[in-house]
Length: 145
Image 1 (cartoon, rainbow, N blue to C red):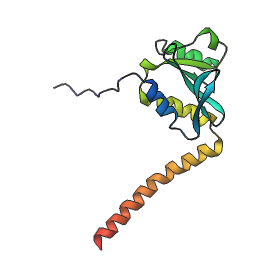
Image 2 (cartoon, rainbow, N blue to C red; image 1 turned 90 degrees about the vertical axis):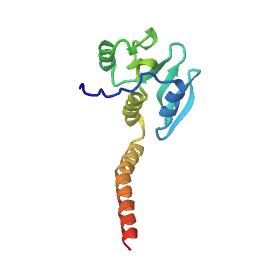
Image 3 (cartoon, rainbow, N blue to C red; image 1 turned 120 degrees about the vertical axis):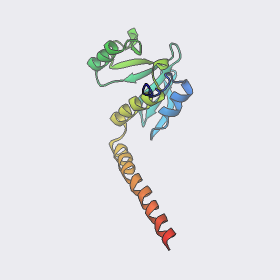
Image 4 (cartoon, one colour; image 1 turned 180 degrees about the vertical axis):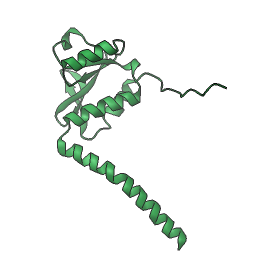
């Protein structure tokens, strides 16, 4: 009997999913950038949806990183003449999953968010499992009594 295949997530992110995921990061907000709605972290550009070609604008570390992405997966990543001199890549929304989008945005959010905010988020994430564990222990003590 053949092994069961792991079901892969369906590709494609809707504009509503994009907005929900992008705005889920701390201190993000939607503002206009050159006349188009964009997402910012504090006062820094984070990302935006391009309606003209249903793509997302992502800022990457540098132009060599962008070029590598373009070479590795040209069906997903591309640029227009406007972006050729910037460390930015356009991502076709129909080619990524919501999980991939969240991972890409988290990486970028960590780069541009205020350092104190990143530290606070990391500390809260470490404390969260401790809080859950404490609640479980308290419940066990209550049942014993």
